[in-house]
Every structure is written in C-alpha cells, then in structure tokens.
Amino acid sequence: MIAAFLPRPLAASGDRSRPAQLLLLALLVLLLLTSAVSLAVGAADVSPLNVLGAWLSGEEISIRERVILFDIRLPRMLTGLVIGAALAVSGAVLQGLFRNPLADPGLVGISAGAGLGAVSAIVLGSALPATIAAAAGFYLVPIAAFLGGWVTVLCLYRIATRAGQTSVATMLLAGIALAALASAGTGVLVTLADDAQLRDLTFWGLGSLAGASWVKLLSAAPIMLAGLACAPLLTRALNALALGEAAAMHLGISVQRIKALAILSVAASVGAAVAISGGIGFVGIVVPHLLRLAIGPDHRFLLPASALLGATLLLAADIAARTIVAPAELPIGIITALVGGPVFLWILLRKRGLVDV
Amino acid sequence: MLCTRQLSVTLNRRKILHGVDFSAAPGQLTCIVGPNGSGKTTLLRALTGELPFTGEALLDETPIQSLRTEELAARRAVLPQASPMAFPFTVLEVVRMGIGGGIALRADAARLPQLALERVGLRGYEGRLFQQLSGGEQQRVQLARVLVQVWKPVVGGVPRWLFLDEPVAALDIGHQLQIMRLAQDFARRGGGVIAVMHDLNLTAMVADTVCLMQDGRILAQGRVADVFTDCTLGTAYGCSLRVSTPPPNGGVFILPQAAE
Image (cartoon, rainbow over the protein chains, first blue to last red):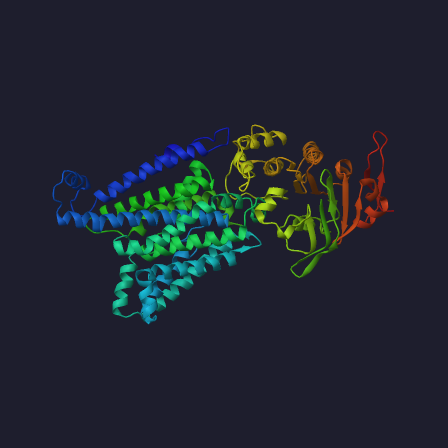
C-alpha cells in the first residue's frame, strides 16, 4: 500500500499536498484495520466480531471474553497505538530540529536518559516524602522518565549545536556518551534495588507491551498526548528551520521558543513511552524516512502521517511479537530492530556524505 | 527610513562595528561595499534583527529591537549568503515558505510562488528538488522566496525592506544583472533595498546610494560619484584604484592599477 506511493516521479507542479492528503487517508484506513486485527489476535480464542454480535443482539458476554477483550487486548492495543505515534512523531520532530534525518530518540540516548529517570523513580521513589509520592501516584515513573529524557535532549542539543549549526558526528557521538552514562547510572540503581523493586524493574524493562494495562496506559498516555499535541504548533517552524536558524528567524519564527517546545515535546513523548514499554528502537527513524520518500519533507503532512504510520507499524510489530512464537512472546524491540536496523543501514548508505562531515 | 546612531556590535568579545551611523531611504537601492572583514555583513545582520547590538537602529521610526520576530518578518525579508537545505523540498515548497504565517492568506497568495519564480527566470522549475539545483539556481529560488515574503513594496503607506547579502556572488553576469534589476524595480515601486556587494563596477551601475566601510566604520556614504573616488576607494581597499567615466553614458567604472 505504501509502496504504491514510493517511486512516483515528482509532479511538475512541485505541489505534493494532494498525494500527501491521499496517503494520510490510506494510512488512517490501514491503522483502523491493524487495530482491528490487534484486537482479534491473541493466545486465547476470542473474536471481537462474535463479542460485538453478541452485544448487539443483547446476549450475555462471558466474563472470560470481557476480561480478555477489554482488560487485556484493548489497553494493549491502545498502548501500542499511542507509543507508536509518539515515537514516530518524536523522531520526525527531532530530525527537523537537528536538521538531519539520522536523529532518533533511541540512537542519540534520549531513551536511555528516560530509562534512567524511570529506574530512579522505581528504586528511589520510596525515599521520597510520602506526600509527594502519594501526589505523584502512578504518574511518578512516567514523569521521572520524561525529566530524564528532557535533561538528555537539552544536553545533547547544547553539545551538538553551535551557532545554529548541528554537527552530525558530534550529535551521534554525544548520544553514545550520554546513553553510556545513563546506562551506568541505571546499572548502579539496579544494584541498589531491593527484591520488590527488582521485580518492578524486570517487569518494566521487558521492552514489550506485554505489561500493558489500563493503569499504565492512563498514567503515561496523557504525557505522550501532551507531547503529540505540540506537533501542530511546530510544523511551519520545522519547515523554515530546514533553511537554517537565521533564515527561519527572518521568516518570523521565534527560533528559541520553537526549539524549547520541540525538545519538551520529544522528551514528553519518548519519556512516557519508555516508562511503559522500555526502549523500542528505530520506529522514530524508519517511519519519517519512508514518509519523506513518499510525500516529501513538508512537516504539515509528515508529522500526522508519522503518527498514523508509527502507530500502525508498532501494532503490526506487536501482532508479530505475539504470534511468531505463540504461545510465548518475543519482545517487541526485537521486531522493530529486525526491521529498523536494515532500513537504518540503507539510509546510511544513501547518505554517507552526511555522516562524514 | 532606516537609520542607525552609534550602532556597535561585539562578537566573541571582539568589537566588529564601532559606532556606525548608517541610513537608507525607501525608494532607493543602497549598496554596502568594503574590503573583506570590514563589517558589511555584520551591519546587515544587525539591521535584520539577527545580531544583538548597542546604540540605536530605527526601522521607519520604530526601534528594531522592539519589534517581535513576526512583526519584523512582515516588514522586511532577508536573502542570506548561502543556505544549505536540510531536506529534499521541491522548489515550489521552498518558495511557499515565504508566504507569511502572521499575514492572512489572500486568494492570490496561491499564485505568488509562480509569479515570483517567473520573475527570477525559473518558470517551470516548481517540481525540481532544491538540493539538486546549481548554486546559481538555488540563489534565485531563495530570492523568489524572499520576494514572496514582501511581495508588495509598500503596504498601507509603510515601505517594506529587502536585505540582500551578496545576492549575486554565485551568479553569472546575465543573472547578476537580472537580479539587480529586480532589486532596483522593488526600490522604484517604493520599497527599500539594502545590498551587501563585492563587485564595485556592478555597484556603480545599479546603486542609488552607496556606503563604503572599512574596519567596522563607515568611510563614506552618499551618491556613487561622491563616494567612489580614487582616494576613498584606495584608502578602503589598500590598493591603487582608478575611477573613470566611460564615454557612452557617463557611468562610473573602476579599474585596478598595477603597482608602480
């Protein structure tokens, strides 16, 4: 379906908004289909269609069916949907901000920083004054992950960007260093953790949607949705930033404000995503790259399309993770790495010059 | 009217501009010339609101620092020296970026990019990828984008301004003339144009007013015939230059003289 849009020669008019709108529509349909499949597939033999039919004809729905569908599959589907959208949009925003298609929340250490935040909250959370811990409640881990991711992006931007110019090599290397630091910090905290906390950590670190629940979803989704809600405010600015910071300013963009907003948006989306599912790599780099090939880099279309395709891809990866070795499950991160790794190498080969700066 | 009083710029603790009193009038093409490192581009960047400065700079009686980024963008457009493009935008998409955010889109806004591309001689380039164009073509696409941003030279009696930083540096002689004619035309219709230039002969041919800089100061400012003399140019550039008037139309041209 996506392939149909790929090799199309550019229209002579240079206006790609029509194909972009069509693609958005197609992606929406694809996402709805994938969501339906995600609800239908699972270890237990429960069909949402039968349940829907039963509900419509006024029959009794068994407790088993209700639990499997509404307490297991539905929150899992919604979690995958929001996380996929959040990761893909963050990738696109980060690439626009750094003016480089190789920026990815996982690659440049933001996920690791968010992970450090999440682990800190789990291990050190008990040391917090009871009032604060009670007030934060279920939000403690996602908020800590958001703060960890935020500090990481701020550091990364400070290090990699000077006078409005980003050095790709510095960005990637600084990302490696920050990720190493964050992992070291995480390691220290894991050693300090007691048995109950270790169980929480293992549960959290599965890097899959297997632990998805309404509680987790409702604690992290608002933060991710807040991050996603910033995206429409960024589209024109990210387009102008492609011309350089000075030119964007000349076009009337408040560059400093936009950068702060973009960094907050990425930290919120990635932080909260990591808080639920651990690090899921490559979604943020593969999705925007494929879409730029199809409809071009105009962020007015790129960001919403990234949300739709990211959600679809993550749901598809989750379906694969659940079915390939059923009744066991693969961590979803393995699936995204299997797909994303080669695509990333392909981008590198095409754009070798970009890295050798 | 654009004028500065005692405008100074310090970058990395080094003072680049030393109390510059510069002025430019709408309806005129004002060229800033001077040797490398004399502060031409720094002056332009201060006037566009890009660099912090001390002293006073008034754009049509409003202090430039007091204008918000969007307000500045509605009153002036800037053609940068060279702009590397981060993503594969088409020519049309680049030119469209000039259509302002603050200004409500009018019905004819959709046609502006085509009209602007026609003016810079790039009709039919709409679907090409910007990154795949030659340097000269990229510069002309950027000019079209800038023209779209300030399409009408005068809005509600207030002039709009074009800042051009070495607009013809990458262009062949035919396109140099074409671009400078566009700048002149913008000025004739009531807008203000300030261009940093390297080519003294081209400047002599097109400028209404010229400002000669040296070491972060203005050496001379006024009509071409008054500023371009053997003496001032020789002082500014540190070499022997002869200013002459050719017979056909009485314009000024400058020839370098071999050292004696």
